[in-house]
Length: 171
Image (tube, rainbow, N blue to C red; front, side, top):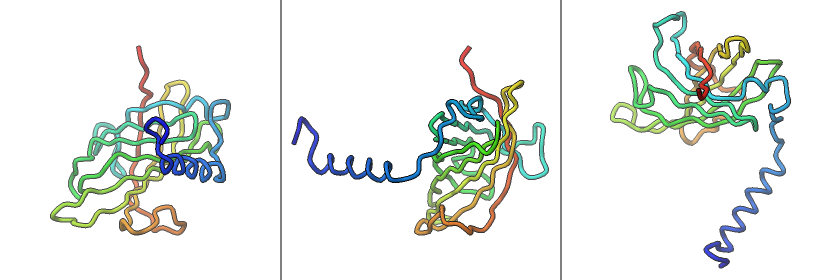
């Protein structure tokens, strides 16, 4: 052991680094066509066909310059038709200037009504308006059993909702 660092921990870190090194890396947005999108947005989420003040929840979506995405929603404690769920983490890629596709994964929390945990997958298609520093687009939620692969192609489509938000900036 080297100052609190065990050999097994070192091997785990080395293995994780090898897996990442062998995997294709997302192109960073730092100097790309989606550079302006990098940031955190406070959003309103709308049921299909709704807009204005008829939103179902609020959320924070963060897009990093290294291609990571995170999603936190005000409805995580559960709401009508949906049980509690965790924050989402994933990645995003630039599709064309100021347009991105992002995927986040989260987990449902078992309840008496739904005793089996599931994996939630959100697919976002977002466009950025540089003048107003806002995003607008759609998100599609798909749920799969905990033992399933949410990244497997050919998933059934899920529930779609509209999302619109503004960038969070420090004054």
